[in-house]
Length: 132
Image (cartoon, rainbow, N blue to C red; front, top):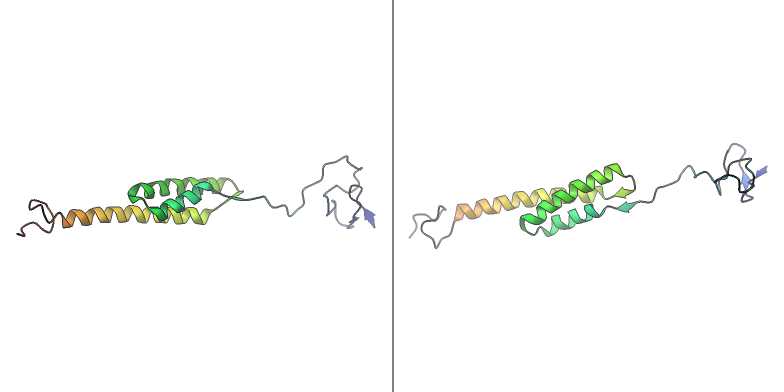
């Protein structure tokens, strides 16, 4: 059985690197930098634009929050797609959906207010026209 020259642990006969420290088989002590383990996982972090998109989609703040939720959501999706260390795609999608729902809701609310009109103003172009 062979032993690692760097850390002293037993080496598997079929492996080229030490499972404990990653030093190459047959390397002299301290001569080579350790190889990364095969199962190395990149650290991930949540994308800030995704969080902002979700929060603004929930809070709404009339149409301004909805527009910002859309902008931040699309920026977050682009960054998440291009950088594997980012996560939060679900939050970005939820923010985008809530942003579009807020835009549609705002348009519907404005259309409803225009259709109903002002009951005090007799000259308005709403449903109250002609009522006295």
